[in-house]
Length: 91
Image 1 (cartoon, rainbow, N blue to C red):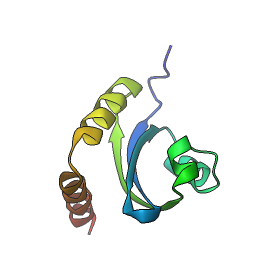
Image 2 (cartoon, rainbow, N blue to C red):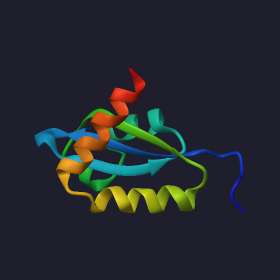
Image 3 (tube, one colour):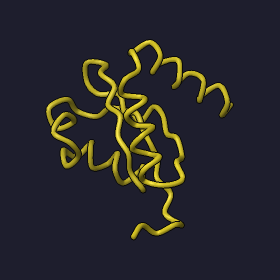
Image 4 (cartoon, one colour):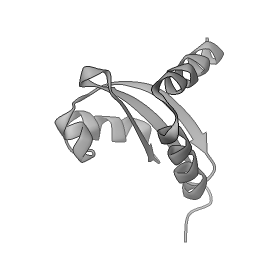
């Protein structure tokens, strides 16, 4: 059973070559460091993670997985617009 207090996050990382990698986690900083050290996913082992570009809170694992799938289906231009929009809100 999932802990109802556990917060999940969807994140987007920029990798070498400018590729965008999307994933989910309960701890964004830990997961980003795993990607950077080669202990993340296979993709980020081959294409080193450079920069954390975007995070979004989700209430549970199910909603995080659904949102991750939505973002992964977006064309690159819409992912970049999502990142830009989030940055504008945080300023």
